[in-house]
Amino acid sequence: MKRNILHLTMITAASVAALICIMALMTSESFASTFTFKDVPQGKSYDAFFGEINDYDVTAYYKIKPTKKGYITFTADYSGYVALCNSKKKVISKGSSTGDYLSGNSDYPWQRSVSYGVAKGKTYYVRVKGMPVYDSTDANYWARVKWNNSKVSPSKCGSSKAKAKAVKRKKTVKGLFVAGSKKAQWFKITNKQKTTKIYINSKKNDGAVKFKIYYKSFNKWYDTTYTLMRSDDYYKNTITGTISKKIKHTYYIKVYPDAKTSGYYTIKWK
Image 1: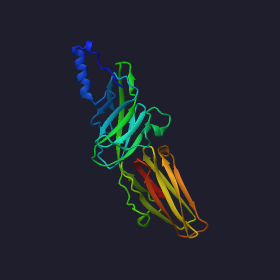
Image 2: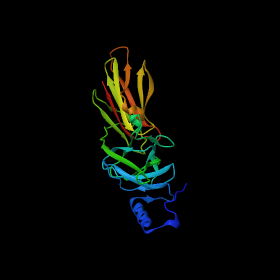
Image 3: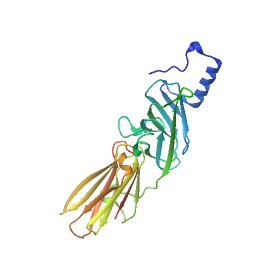
Image 4: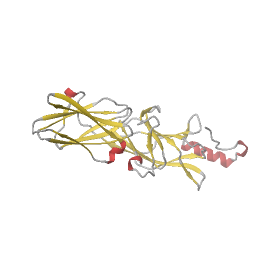
């Protein structure tokens, strides 16, 4: 897939000047339909200029550097598939083989932004594959993007069932999976009432964060798994456990990301 910025037979002084301006705004890769936009500022709308492209599937890399450990939220005014890459542009977080679907004009709120778990001070690239917006006033293609960085101070968790950290009643615990992290995080809930309601939520990319709950009944251990998808981030998610009588009992919760999912989650119970 190639595009022609100028025809060699039509080069003028003005054309050369325009081409220099374009090169100053972006760094082109080894082929014409890939662009890199460096040092995209946090919390501000950024206009990416693509020139007179004629490819439908354009790849853009937006260079970012979070200042807080937590998660980023990325938005764009065009549709495409997004993935988070490391400083070498290697994909480290995405929900499917094509990436995380993003559409700035979608009727579904969860499709208008995508979040990823990140470390403080590291360089990342947000990769977007899609078609920028055509501007008829200057006959060029543009994209307006924006990203924000939210801080998360993760609660202490256990590395195994035996080391699971207790969650106090009505207290919210916070968990974080930085992109590339796959290690499970363990918690436990101990209650004396018949009914236990566990509230879970998340902020992440596509794919899933899974909550595997272990419980004991008649001296035998059982488990059940609850899956939170990106579309579930905008709804109240409740797990209800009920026993036959009031007696002290414990639920163990194993939280882990599916595939290359990353992001933030919370657990609370009462």
